[in-house]
Length: 80
Image (cartoon, rainbow, N blue to C red; front, side, top):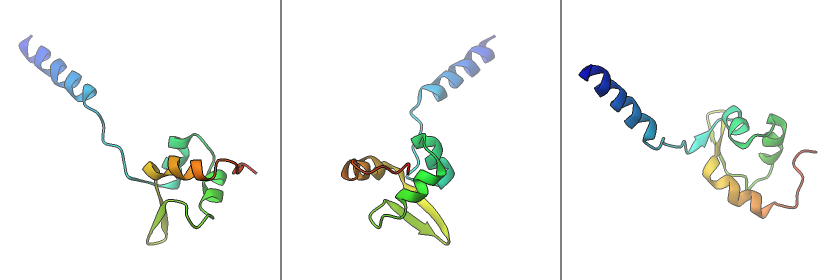
């Protein structure tokens, strides 16, 4: 019984710890995080100031910088 209580306690501790957020997201991860489509992400990536980096040929979104970038471009419609 003590073992079960110890295991449940460690599970609870793990669930309560804040999870580390990724700094870079793939396009697929950015789609899920932002709740938008791949097409919209790729359209945003055409802007030279969009926060992303290339690793080999893979584009990675600097997700923590996206909200500020969107504020700069708030009047533009990326869904078209």
